[in-house]
Length: 237
Ligand SMILES: Nc1ncnc2c1ncn2[C@@H]1O[C@H](COP(=O)(O)OP(=O)(O)OP(=O)(O)O)[C@@H](O)[C@H]1O
Ligand SMILES: [Mg+2]
Image (cartoon, rainbow, N blue to C red; front, side, top):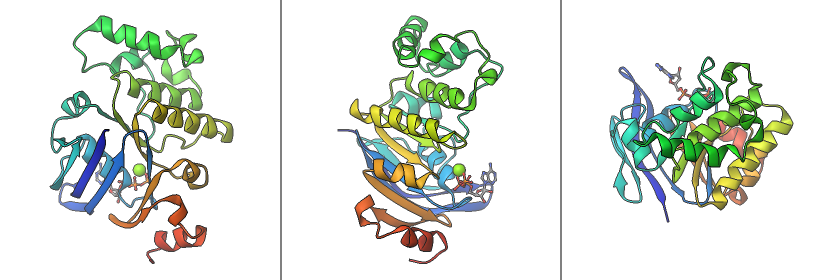
């Protein structure tokens, strides 16, 4: 089983500390959610775990192998990939070119192509638009493209930063269903979400951050009611 462990992560930008010593654990084949108000450091935490932002102190490991301060491509080789907030698709590149970016750590271009072909079958609308510029896809299709790109390296663990943000209600459900499908393949998911109502029923475990600190850790059944979450968001207990 693959376990992602983050311990006492401290990080920020230039001299400003944003994340003040957060620890968490996420399991393979499970969905672990991070909720919290805007600007509380959720994306900053994910970036630090994924190697996209230096950790000031603390550590992250996958199955006991340290990830702390490895460059992003080495973190990807260890099996952990971040889908950044907003998806990060390259609008002027085609669907295929975007997908190939997901395989940039693989030395063998044939392998990248065969992985993409295997993957694209599950995304028929991408298969039909291989040579279309990603920027001309709908928001929902771009979200699917960024999810598919994340999978080209065949990660054991994916960090998803608001995968359903800005999508229509139907696309929110489709996106979350696809994410749940990944856990059936044993992939571990650590996901930041604002659509709490939709994401909570899928979560095996959840964390709530506020002001760069962990304020709650538990299972959805440990949450008494919406009021309790709002209180944590507003700085209460
Ligand atoms: N590249 C950056 N340089 C400087 N400060 C940043 C940078 N990115 C984020 N910040 C600041 O760090 C703090 C935390 O931002 P972060 O993006 O981690 O929050 P978040 O919880 O993901 O918010 P949201 O829910 O809006 O996505 C904010 O005050 C933000 O302004
Ligand atoms: Mg964010």
